[in-house]
Image (cartoon, rainbow, N blue to C red; front, side, top):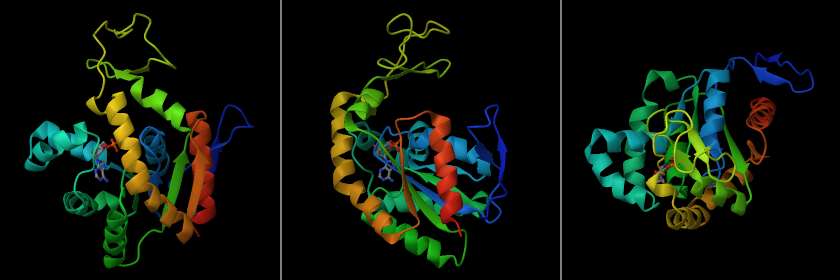
Length: 242
Ligand code: AMP
């Protein structure tokens, strides 16, 4: 076990391991849109102090900046389709050159195609030995996912996130905290969700299968409290990171 692990919890039965990884690790968080990869990545980033790199967030930042990549990505993302592999590879190549990645990172939303997985593999082996690579799949039932995504609304002012099914605002359509009208991400609509799921099945499920067969892989169930999933991921990484 390579973690310097200590445990904190008010409830001794629910140990949450914390602490920086001694030798770092490269984590690939895999799973369909909406399973909670981003949420888990943020928790793991706090525990391990390695960066959370989300290709979706990087692309949204390009859209906001109005860069040439952002201009191209905007419509593709709104349709729920994938950005061409070559552009994603270029964007990731830039990000992975930043020094905060040298002791490992958590990738969220990448790789999404077999070609991206091949690119990552050669990129990682090309820079010589480094932290080990571990793939974690978060799994969830499709109907639950549909509710999670299509019910998601956010407050554009204070950024509170609601869910019409699981965590609705008190007054339909408005933020509880500041009364602002709630918004929906353009790629969270039912039509776009169905498109994203189809693309996931076609392009990304084979990537998950490839990492499963290669080993250094664990699958965790995503329909549970956030801390439970985090603890299971940490335990799996402890086990696999030898
Ligand atoms: P996400 O926030 O990860 O759900 O990503 C939002 C959107 O960004 C996706 O629906 C795609 O249009 C695009 N995107 C994110 N990551 C990738 C990737 N690795 N390859 C291609 N497109 C991506």
